[in-house]
Image (tube, rainbow, N blue to C red; front, side):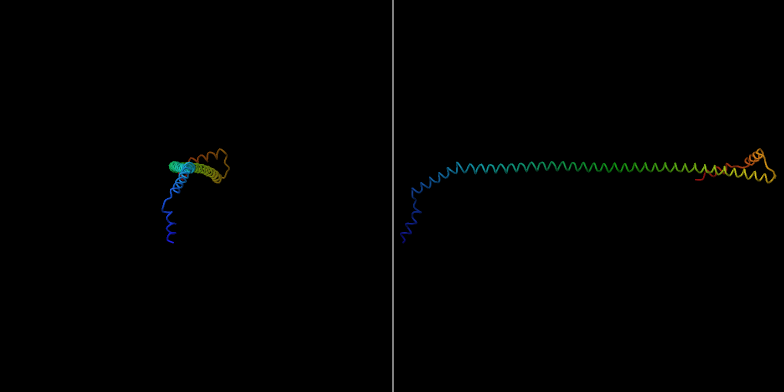
Length: 182
């Protein structure tokens, strides 16, 4: 039994020239087929994959550069928008100040006009009141004179009596005193 075991294991250890040659021939044919048919396809696929990866990297780089440019543009526009907003706010403040000054000026002018109109109204009312007082004085003077003289006076007599009475009265004091009131 030991012979069988030795004989069966010896063929693995001892090289057979025929088998070695056929192994080398099959290996060379396989290598030739792989070199001519398979390796170029594998290389082409690897080159195509590398090119796709390079294109993706380039596209990513371009996208990053564009994004950086857009970010710079965005920041610039944002800065300009803030500056413009500040200018608008400043113009609005200035406009409000101008409007306030104009409104105050208009209010002052209107108040002065109203005060002037009120003064004119007071003066007119004062003149009217003085004229009414004067007519009442004239009527009272005529009535008093008729009572005292117990006769009816003629138009000429009434005029002379009124002029005499008027010359004795000083209406300028009344007129100037009323026109000085606010």
